[in-house]
Length: 80
Image 1: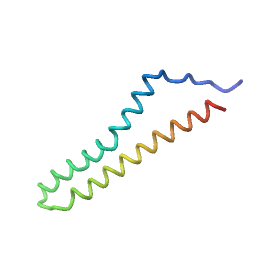
Image 2: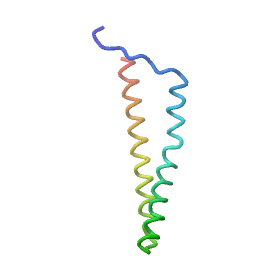
Image 3: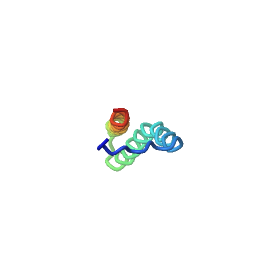
Image 4: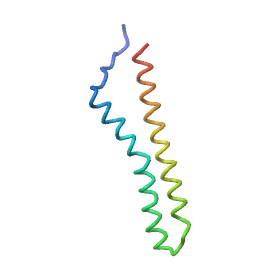
């Protein structure tokens, strides 16, 4: 009984949070590609778009995993 019981988020807040995850991966990949596009134009190269696209995808997956781990850890603590 000494543990702080956190209130569960409202349903619409949960829906909004998980909907944002659907945009997370494509948005991070797009940001990486757009950055590389301008860097390729500035430096006259043709390979940076691949590198930054992969970095954007990796960053998206890292953030996705962080959010999912946080949420599963919170549900495990609330269920105990």
